[in-house]
Image (tube, rainbow, N blue to C red; front, side, top):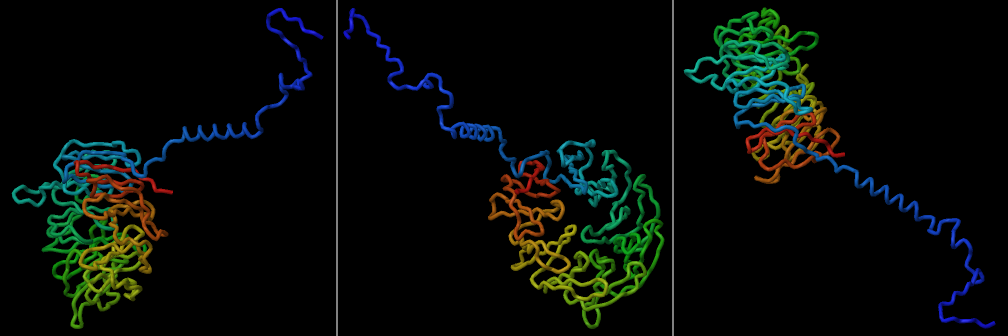
Length: 441
């Protein structure tokens, strides 16, 4: 059949004869692969999670910064608070939040902040300077910052007791004991008044005897005539006396260790170590002491330190429990103990050790332990590869062979003290910085 043409476009209707399915115009199922939808959804979820996730918190982050002078004192309390003095202004901060709890009016700066029985005991720098007189001791409430009382003399604390004693003269402030002279006054914690007085004719070594075996804490005085006396801390009454052998009496001799009074004294056969009952002052036992120059607590034991090493004994009978010939010093830190050596005359940290066995729990060679407590059995330590290098901070805890690294301190940071989950350091910029730290998982 012919086709008529009129010079315009020709449209030919092919119908469905070409073979195209009817569903091409309106498909009844998806024309994309079945895996395409789940893949797009998964990619979208991953993108949203990545975009919304916050970056990990820094291991060490500043919580509080204070302006302080190089001689200003600070202390971390057992309850996790920072007590700091800046140009005579005393302030207390909550270490958990960094918030200021209270602040006092400026007063004479002190060389040390002492905390006892809920009080802050302040004694100005001028103490002991000739011509300036006795500045006395001022007690400030740790809870509120209010001044509670002030009295003349130096008010001291006793180990293992909440008692406060005012002494007329202190010739040594180091070691577990103090050499005093003149009257000893028991101070009322609330009012600062004298509760009782013991008159010391000349000088004496003053020490506290902690509570043990059901007995309350007591006061031990070793007079310069070698007479030892135990006094009741409630009334000041003398409970027992004894004549001790000739010895080099001082702040570290005798010592109260393991519930007994231990005294190093010379004999015809050499230096001996004798143990005395803290209640009756009767002699319990005596053993050769060798070249021992200091005695310290070692958990349940007593550690004898000397040039030939550290020897731990049972204070009940003096028997040896363990011996470390390369150690020179041990230091009790709560329930843990640190050991130090001196291979070339330079003190080096051996490690965190078990005081009952002398076994090294964490190797700390090259690390420097910080004062304070890291929390639980943890101990914060620092390490610098060389002079001028940034200081690394780590956590040492029983169960770890080596310290766990936390972070590097900023340059110019030092003189640090630890607290649970906190690190307090001075900086060369004249600041006291409190860092919050978290241990890496």
